[in-house]
Image (tube, rainbow, N blue to C red; front, side):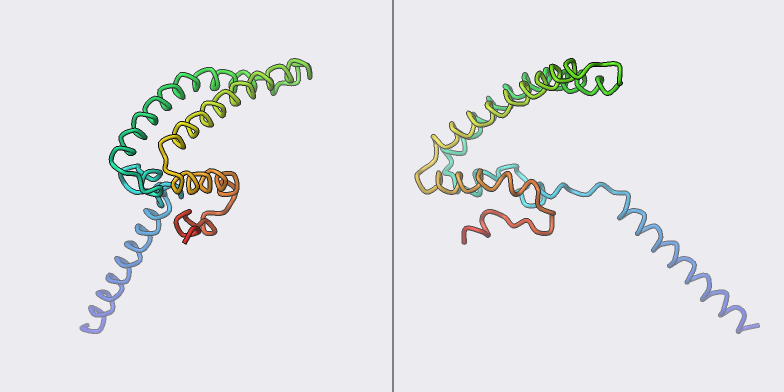
Amino acid sequence: MNEQRRIRLLLGIIGVLVALNIGLLAWLWVRPAAPEHRRNWSRSGTFLSDTLGFSPQQRQQLGELQKSYFQQLQIQQKPLKQARKAYFRLADSLFTVEQRRQQALAFHQQAAEIDLLTLAHFDRVAGICTPAQRTLLNTLLSELPSRAFRTPRSRKTVADSTR
């Protein structure tokens, strides 16, 4: 009888541990993962000023530039979303190739406006940089296209690559 109790107790403990392991695995699988670019940024969202080593005055200027940029970007986002929706509504075979081409050009024109806005913003950011900071900023910006297509494990921070 003592042996049966012991076996039941051990089976109960094993059952509880299995349930806890299943719960842990489910939690790890379901919870949202932090995006890769957020893992490398500081909590305060000051990746650019931290990487470039901005002074307090430069940080303030960058904050003003970013505020202005994001306000302008928000204005441009609505037409881009509308153009994107209109473009993908043309998936039906009832539309002609010319209609699809016109809508694609409208969509890409809106995207180009946002790209130009972003380039102008980085020109202004470069204007508040010292020559050494400008060199590092140019390195950061030149790496953006290649960084976008790397797998998360192969990414290195810019600060690591400049050492």
